[in-house]
Image 1 (tube, rainbow, N blue to C red):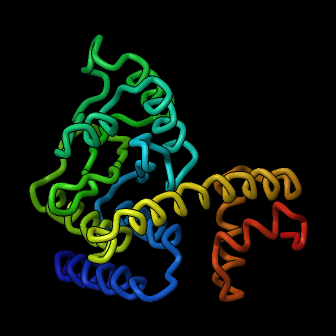
Image 2 (cartoon, rainbow, N blue to C red):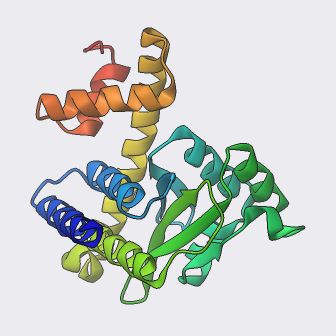
Image 3 (cartoon, one colour):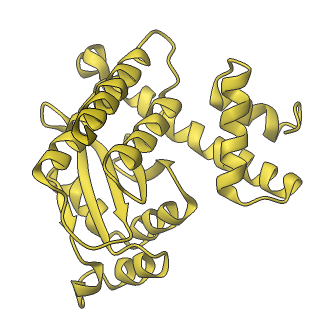
Length: 237
């Protein structure tokens, strides 16, 4: 019965992700849906996505918690860690026990343990040899992902990659760069809006993001547009 329930949830997840691949879809919301789905289906404590800009620099564009975002940001600032290596190699990278890393990636080890994460798994966002980022899974317990969970994570990552690039973006490099830059620019604006909401409501950043997303969905608005209105003070959440 549990297996049947998981299969149904997985099917529903792919349908939900596929439904977002329509004209004028919100790429940031697509990626947020992906990390939320992975955290739920793969029994991860948190999940996040990094995307590369046109120059190849990685940035965090979606995360399920501020804790995982901080660990990812630390890797970006140092240039080292499993998520960065996953992007560089285009291959899955697993740290089944963060405490056993020793002298390898000391900054990542300290940050992960400080945030309560004991295993991390990076899955590349790639299509036909093009790697545009990584899907990162964080767990509070040690251990490796099962082969089934690894396959599910890669499948979900592939759907997201197609959603970002699409076939036309592979043929037209300018469109691909524009999609990626839009996602990165949108995330910067959303982070600013989170800060505004967190300050005005006196809540943490995770609660602030949920407020932004709930407002966007409740009013059938683009998440980026809501963030822009919050930053410009044209709406108050």
